[in-house]
Length: 455
Image (cartoon, rainbow, N blue to C red; front, side):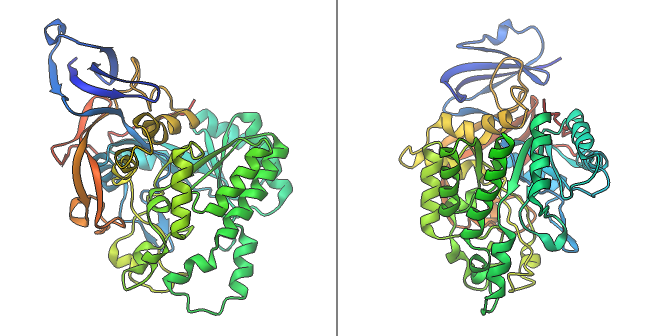
């Protein structure tokens, strides 16, 4: 068995940072010490000199949609393409989704595990969508937990495509089932009634710039309050996916004051992009759900992230090609979603580099350790500890560069962060001790990614 020795890097975990050497044997971290002499290692050893670099646990993108079938087409970043883009951004594990076929959660989950396992070049875990209440659902939920799925996802909108469970008593029962079984409940929060009422009185042209009007922040806040009220009655925590607005944040604060445990996720696009992008010929490139908001919403979410009110930054990576996105100028029919896995780490590191609003330890927590803990992957993932998987990122915190389409590796052909100046770049990405990205080259192998069972 060969070994990997990373020397003289600055190791960053959630609670400490220290200059140390880290020894990997096979797929695991086996030793961390101030100095490890290569001559003391009996097997073949590869030495990497990490002077001037940060050594980070692999990023966990806790919200992705690779190879998503949507509206009669499929996203351009399948499992191979998504893995490649992610590796360039230091992402070693993604948490994707299995849809509910409304027949069998076990069948839905097993099918998605098999599909992803055949194509992924990095590791993955899964959330399971639940789109209908039915007899025997608790047994189904118990079965998917036994298979290694620790979270379900519910929607408060998309009634038209069959994702919405409307009846409060059914939602309450599902929440209680998940509480009994120890499953996390993740919620896409946009109130369908608010959206329907807004649409009924709308007189505009359905241009991309009208998308935030049709799906207002009020809908997000209303759904958070409604779902939060049910969670309080059921006595369970909730995970809010992709928080997009200050109004939604205020609803989170109100529920926390009432005693509800809320884990809140936001995305780079809600932190750094606003609705001004929804103007001009390229506006469809910036359509996603929920829509982009006002600059004040960016500022409120950045502040909430930096003061600890937001626990996870993930991407909701859902990439369509430029051509796919520009097929329509009608916000109702534009394919919704943007890429983001590759841009995640450098964008969030900007909050560290520009004025130290976020510490390096906090950055690791929201991008890696936090997602691993919340979804039952820790300490196998999300940690630089003896016994953890050797998912390791070597990151140069001093390189200043510009995010452009030519620098990115998604198949979509654009980046929504075009022209954004960032500080910090991934130099090498290791997955379970194997180099999957180095020197700007992707070295991942399709099918080498493993399903990580949550515990």
